[in-house]
Image (cartoon, rainbow, N blue to C red; front, side, top):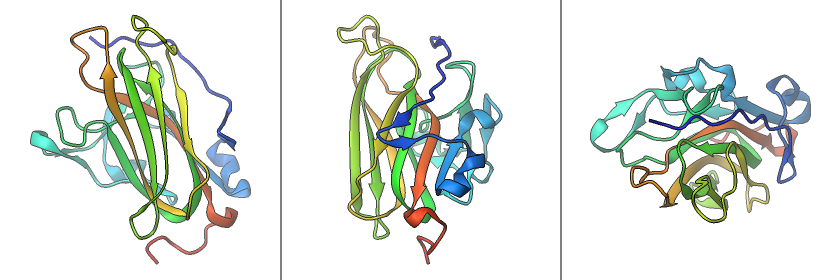
Length: 207
């Protein structure tokens, strides 16, 4: 049974990129998607979580489980978060989406679903599909292992891109766990914040 974590609310700057509410995003050229604003504990079609700025595929697909809707987890902690890929699927540990307009920085907050140590990687890709920035954070969410980093959300960001980004992936690689039952890196993402190129909606990524 998954361990429930204490509620942690983050009000901080993530590597210099301030997380703001969607209401204030337009004037600052910054957009934040908060998954606590969506129905918790439900499977949602990709169109239900997509916006002008961040677009998700219709379904998550991978492995032997085929395709299914995106899962807004409500069991890890009292508020909701976007869960990573399909249980047992090839894309487990991966969240990916594309941007309608080029962005110059990406920041998110994530937390593990159970107690384990993992390396979390956020990669930004340019218009041509090549990586333009990457950040990897090792976070130990297992209180029984040395170097415990605590429960709750932690930040990952890429802010110095070689070129504007038109898509991203966020993944986790399991490293260790004190329990033999936790052998995969399940996590949820609480918010995703992007800064639009030149602070406005300009040329589309696919334009």
